[in-house]
Length: 127
Image 1 (cartoon, one colour):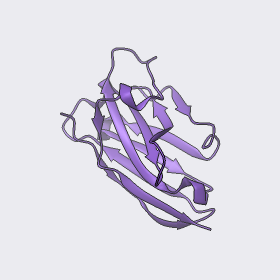
Image 2 (cartoon, one colour):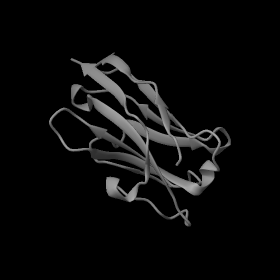
Image 3 (cartoon, rainbow, N blue to C red):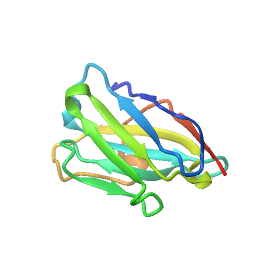
Image 4 (spheres, helix red, strand yellow):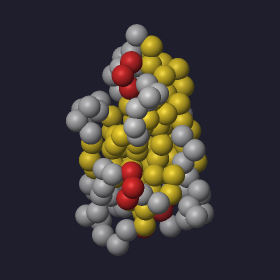
């Protein structure tokens, strides 16, 4: 198991910025591709962003492109999700997920392709 620990959620106002962190302590994190997903009340879990194992490639859902930035620091076994220009529709529980991959080209926007998950971090954005 690769325990993923998320932090950084909170109650924000529209237009604010917030950074989520996802830490996988004690692992060779550079072997893992990582994705962020979110689930709003009454909705299915949806893709937000993904990053290749080296960090050289990033991918975003259309709804967050230009506002959110995913990055990673493999030396710290940490992936970040910087969220700018937050909107009320960004309100959700945010999850990070990881899977060990053999290629830096690999990414997936499908939650079923990820093996390890964090506990979730609540982000609430008021108007």
